[in-house]
Length: 239
Image (cartoon, rainbow, N blue to C red):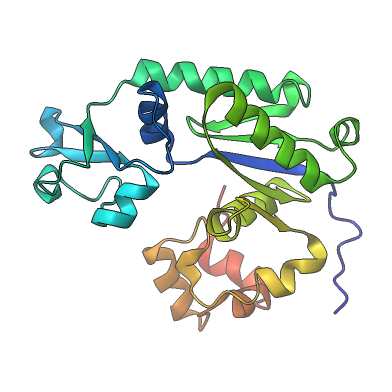
């Protein structure tokens, strides 16, 4: 299928997420493996209504079905394997700064855009060839460097623009053993149009999904093939 994307901006973008960031920082600080130890970061601040879990390690999710920003203190099992620790925001900020310093080794400082405390966008368009024979090889090298220096695991979404990189991260990188996902213009029909649940896509919440449903849009294929002027008329411009 031919897509008319020649006039669209083409680059090499990584969106890198630190896997289970708060929980991983806490496990590494204790000399533990962040992928193998069940640990949760529990806030008992006054506004948490008795205690809110801010972060869970992958093993805590797997063993005890705990979810960050959903599960409460009352949901914690009485299990000696589970580590329960308080949040240390200064530690997480320090690790975030250290991680972004590592990213500066692979592209210029102005091409590293912190997106949140655990995600950054890297414009690798002009530098990736300095570090490997393929874009994916460079992504693996960045993962390895962060892991060796800080003990933290990262997931990488790769795209021709930042939006593709974000979707590749959320939809694919977080669900495969390499922790890397890619979306490019030529793979949009297979990797984006095939999505049947609108709310699986970054930026589409339940309320927006209902508004789209009222326009007879129920999946990403239908959204991609809807007249953009109709969407603008009905939904306005979303910045």
